[in-house]
Image 1 (spheres, rainbow, N blue to C red):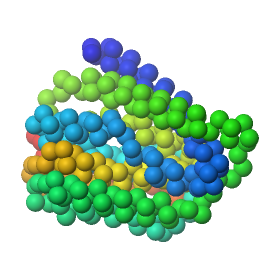
Image 2: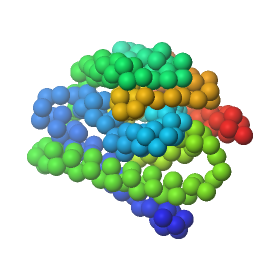
Image 3: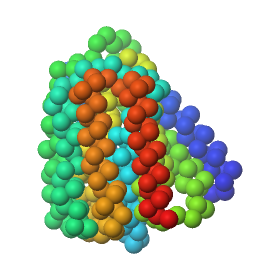
Image 4: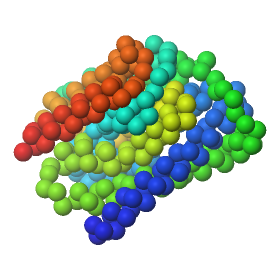
Length: 306
């Protein structure tokens, strides 16, 4: 793919994910209403099942690029907790009081990954244990929001809820793929290490559509869905994705990964959760703070790779 085509893919992906996010939110609210389940719970459970991220991690690890593979989930967690959450707060400030247990589960999601990966290797056994930890944390986070039922919802959207949900998910996946291909094409000729690109450009390119999943529900007065999406995806990336990648092929982590990218992926969700607990909102001040932290993360990553 040439650079001009990559730029067109990037632009097309942005348009597609914004349109798809509207349909996804409508469908999510409608399905939750029909099932009598809080849409927040569905968001936490469904948001992180992103085949493009998992496929990228499995493929890069299989091709002998473990630094890039680890970046898909470590860099993804940091990008979500700091970059996506921060930009979401800047674009559409969120004022919501979520259960304290929700923030706690988000903060501890990466602890098992830290325990297993700190020695520089994730075995198949550890991968299986990470998948089990994912189930525990996902259930805990989802259960914390069982009482957050949707408010008013019109009958037309309720009738077409499932098609909107499935269509929105499909279009988000397609838009995310376009965004990823476009961004990867634009940065392809940058001379940088696989670990740096995996934790920054690759992670951001695969997860750029998350910004629409956060900004759209927040703009429509559903901030709990926006925050639930961030937390649910963090939980998937911190446990499920590394677990599955290691089950397919044990993962070896280099020095930069274990000393910087891994700690960053542990600390960033805790910072995000602490803001929710202490500030009880994600406004422009909090958003700017998180974006600055992510910018500092990228700067340090570039310095380490030079």
